[in-house]
Length: 254
Length: 267
Image (cartoon, rainbow over the protein chains, first blue to last red):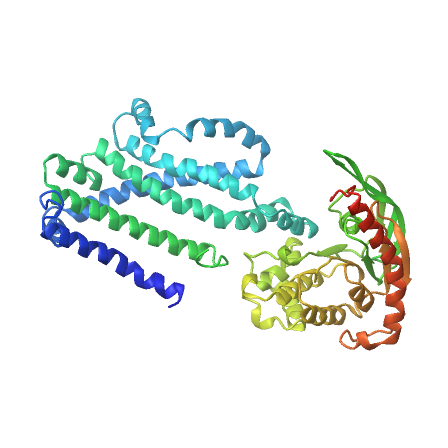
């Protein structure tokens, strides 16, 4: 069995085994099924929520929030990271600010954001954007700084103008690492989307999970969790596909 | 004539944390237009530094390199780097056409020119492949094609075939000579391999240990066009080889003595 075949089989088998174990433990009451309902019951709950509870709509709200926050952080973060990578001046000005804010738990900044923009959708997406924003600043800067010096020499030896240097050499050379940052950002943005919905939103998957929990509809809460998981893996799969298109020269499974 | 290189008192000192290192002693040399000059010398003798100075990638501490300016529009020099110098994000065709693109040559024209060189090197079927899909030998052919496609007066090569196995090396040497013969391009070619220097060069320059200076200059009176694959059974080849080795041997032994006495600093 090749490594590739193994990966393809396990992507189905590995979760399936966990699901079967879970079903078994729950049905036999090894874990209290009032707390952790079996997967078949949760699947039924999801189906019911889709038909009557507007689960699709709820997931849509979460996705919209995710995408707005994600790009709100991704685009300026990448641009600032690029500027810091190519300009030592920008780097020395911005670096101390990034170093001060990056290690703070993002959620701890939420009160400040609320004071600044008020409790509304804007504050939600700003909080979501912080993960991608800082991640892209740091990975993009590192990507540019770590471009093999020989590429710059080759370009210089052919008399490349700054425009060629940035667009034909530095940017594509840094792109594989930047795409790694994009994938990290997907996870961080989703994390904070759900967190923000726990905290303040009155809709979305995070709200569904938290609200169901407080009303002790555990299976509904777990159904929300599963939906969040499905959304997450779908987003990762999409990000992986985009990566393949954007950096086709990078070998798979690197 | 375009492509003559005059190295006039070029010296280089590297300023380092453990004191200054004199890499090159003042060096005088004229490389006539169209000559294939190979430079050999012990490790760390400054041959790469010299090439980088000629390439304009390094500034000499003293002296200057003078070129007879190429005719209008022709680029002065192109460098063939080692294997890693190929851009992994560009296809073989885009890599080959890079120099022309930078010079603003229209897409159709530059691709036609690049394709011509790819054809000569048997790379046509890989034009749209990425470098990682190629063998080391093919990657170096792309490197060579890129330098030639740019059509410079001078080609500078720093151990371009060092990472290839012996058989592949012979084949790429053969390709290189086929491409070069008749172009009247001046070549400066750095190598560790005496055989390679003799097979390719019109003249071989042996350098001394650091600080590098000229130890000897040997003309290679082997007829052209040369057949790389049969060269190693030629008696003249061995005469020349033993002459150059005598000069190099001394330097290599000195280097060993230095290393034993631990006063060697790697630059």
